Length: 320
Image (cartoon, rainbow, N blue to C red; front, side):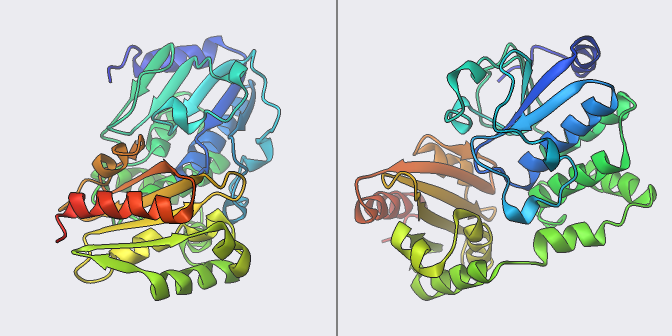
């Protein structure tokens, strides 16, 4: 990947353009929502017309984020289209084709593609929200609500500053936000201290069915499992990190069958220093971060998807 626009160049575009559509990746997580909502609010503060979208709705657990009210299911394809926290076009491929003409990509993933007219990737940023913070700050658009949205993305991708990608800059941004008088504890509580009853049931299912292969732990949810447990895909977000925290586990993977397409199985992985989760997910056309990545496995049945996953894990971790 190679940047073909500078940081100042992005600010100039924000000054020049008047109407923006912002795209977050499918199944938006905390950083995707925080980045998209935060940028949307910053642009609106500058007097611009701005909305944001994704191929999937905002998870209920993130509906408290400021700027979520500007999410739209009918985005304007004629606006200046910006993607945030979206490494590859496959991460928004279910949006209408007229939205696939991307004007500006803002991202922080080390693996990805230069698919936009203007591409800007800062792999030193722990979260895409860190980039949005600096853009809003230098544009004089850093409102309290922009900060709240950005803080969600920041703690989501750093695991509340526990992950190895956390940098001094991450702490500096958090300090600036806290020094504005913004209450950060309720944001952390909403992101990490609360789970739905269905998510608790999903966690119990994972603990009861997890398979350990060498120093890897894997589990799966079929569409039937999800229906039985009354859960959605959002209720599995904690499971891969939780399995990885088990002593002796250096790699974890959770496979979840989509309810709207039974041939699609969504893969979420986490790793410790020993393994590159992004490299594993690239085996299935996915990617992400070294310690957290995702992909999609296509198979005709849960058993077939599980066979693909277990075969790949055996090779990846060298399990005998």
